[in-house]
Amino acid sequence: MEARKRIALVAHDEMKPKMMAWALTHKAELEKHELYGTGTTGGLLTSEVGLEVTCLKSGPLGGDLELGNLIVNDGLDMLIFFWDPMTAQPHDVDVKALLRISAVHNIPIACNQASADFFVTSRWFSTPYESAQPDYTAHINRAVQADT
Image (cartoon, rainbow, N blue to C red; front, side, top):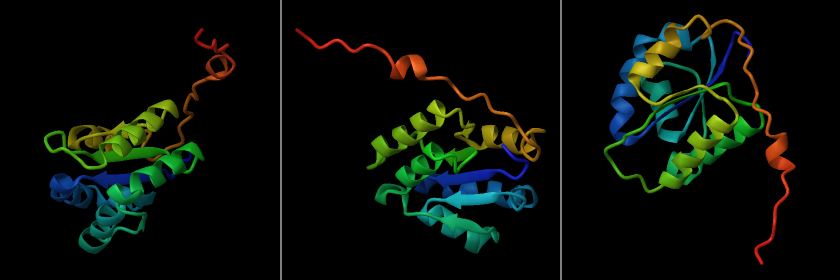
């Protein structure tokens, strides 16, 4: 990862006010990076916080999957996702897929304000970082037996 990170910022509806407050607190640091956001979150970060954010589709309309595609194609370095653990989401499978693909590709994930605070204050947030990429060769080349 370069010093200038490509960071996705996402928040479920009930968490959007917390995301806006957090982003405002850390605006000076966030402005140094390339930011992406799902539809409404990205729009609010631009209009309410004044950050330049590349907006994708809303999460339930495919934005979470668009972020997953960026991760798979080495287009994102970090995911900050204020998800709401208390409210069922209509696109829960997409959220799980995004979190899973982030783990598969060893992308740092902050799922709440505390972990996001740790990210933004880490020495790695604005310096180059050599991420260890998992080797899935054995998994890909495994012998698969048909059921008999």
